[in-house]
Figure (tube, rainbow, N blue to C red):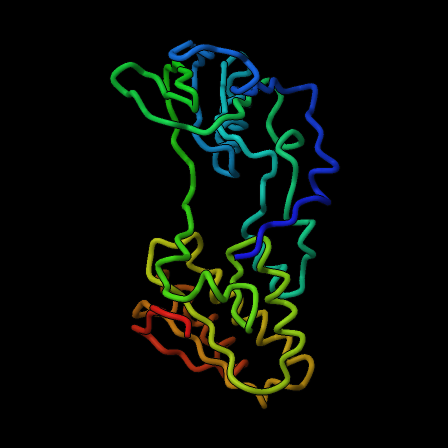
Amino acid sequence: MRQVDISNITDQLSVSPQITVVDAEATGAGSGGELCDADVAIVGRGAGGIAVAASLKSRDSDLDVAVIGPADILYDQPGWTMVGGGIFDAQSAARTMGSLISKGVHWLKSALAAFEPENDAVILDGCRVVKYRRLFVCPGLKLDWGKVKGLEETLGRKGVTSNCHYDLAPYMWKLVRQMRKGRALLTQLPMPIKCAGAPQKAMYLSGDAWFCRGVLKDIDVQFMNAGCVLFGVKDYVPALERYVEKYDAALNFFHNLIAVD
């Protein structure tokens, strides 16, 4: 798969003076050395982790909160679907961590190595220890592209893409813009996936783009769903079915993507 190009983002990296950043590699702490104590340690510096930190600090500004995670960039993953649909540009779906972490929160820029619940501690890369009174674990899901045979070799080229990756969403919009006729296969894999609605959003946004350009009548839209229903919350289904009808999409249930040839 292609490497993510974030040069236009990292050039603008900055850290707010309102947060404390601790680079685990730069501390020089020895093996088994205690990096810090915290009232609350949060594993995961994604949207979930920084939202938990913000919520806790808003309730008690004196609370000692540490967010653990090495990456400098926070990606607006729901926004990737909008990038793939031509609503957002890719750069708007990425922000620097330093601009998002709440005032007074300690940001520990290190990957997690192990949990030690019996000692109320987590171990960071390099065997550094963080002690806590309470622990929140919200690292998110890691995508396993290798589960689908041939997918890693074709992603980002040959008409194969995904709205579940920052670097691939612009290619999806390119394919949507260029398509004038033929068959469009959109897939929804079985749970767990990052967002049960993302595959359908891709179908609706693509269908709308083709509808507005007047080419939808020449495109066979096929939605391949590994599940047995259009959406798990039945109250939403009637509204979604109206869009399925509008874009003349064929719904195929119990169809799971297992290989890309």
